[in-house]
Image (cartoon, rainbow, N blue to C red; front, top):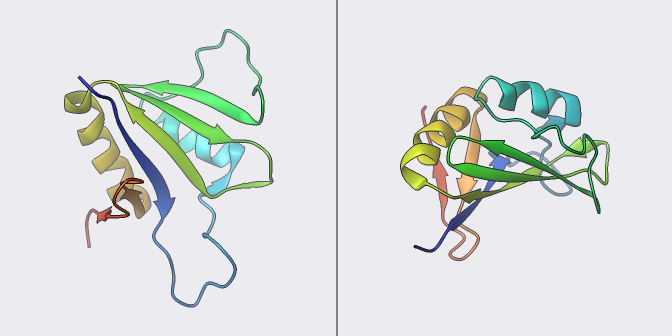
Length: 111
């Protein structure tokens, strides 16, 4: 079964200039994801090659660590039945958006 990838990003504000609005800094993003049972595996404790890998229910997240602010997360769903409901709740709570990188389609949850 092919693994589906999605990108998590903040819903773009039309008034925002210059790229994607940030999700937060690394500590803030880690704190949010921890509430959804998503964290590093603890083996290395450090990002390698500018990416931090985190694991959650049915998913693997890659977090870029090259800058001060995180603007997007790449999510590979290893089990969509587990991952998608968690991602829906995460996006609804944080007012974040899922984007399918193949089609560019964005999924927003909540009001």
